[in-house]
Image 1: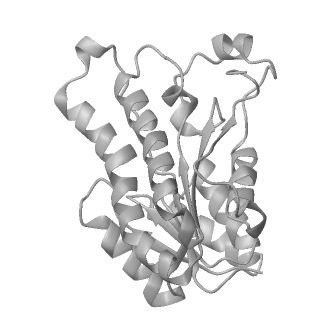
Image 2: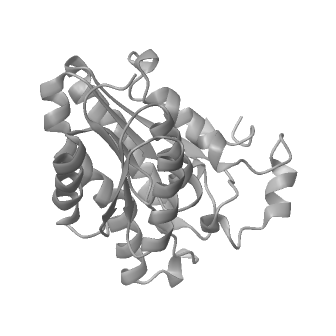
Length: 243
């Protein structure tokens, strides 16, 4: 059974985010389903959760907006209580070789993939520390761990997210709050569109892409009571690509 409070999943209208939201709801957490513009997608996820007996709330907001963290958490708190499980999943790509990445594409990716999670973590931590329980799970990427030409901005954001995970984990461990990351490889989502799948499949020992549900299963574990001694870790989900 879940503790008092709720989960908040950013970028939860499809793919990995939707799978995480439905998985946490199946564990008994009321879930804030964050979306930027896809209101219909959020409602589909909520309908799926409610059909299985869970509770969910759509919370609109662009995580790159400095004011979004307060608004999103406040909406969840008003309906379900404090955010006790925060999953920073929202992410964007703007791929190009480094000489061609302009300031706007650099800013967009860093603000969404790194600054947004930082602000949400900062906002969620105090209620978690007061409760002496909390789970922060950041969806990183293997691109934050190894080179992938054409993704300097994305790689920088995900490497930064892993570094943020480790540091915050060390700061709050004594308060019963864990902070971990999950680093997927190639997963069957819209964000992976345009990736040379054949080249990846040749490099992946499993010879296939992962599924959103496989990533969500890792989040389920990290959000559980059983994972209370796991913190500051990055769980890689890549079919052996980085082995």
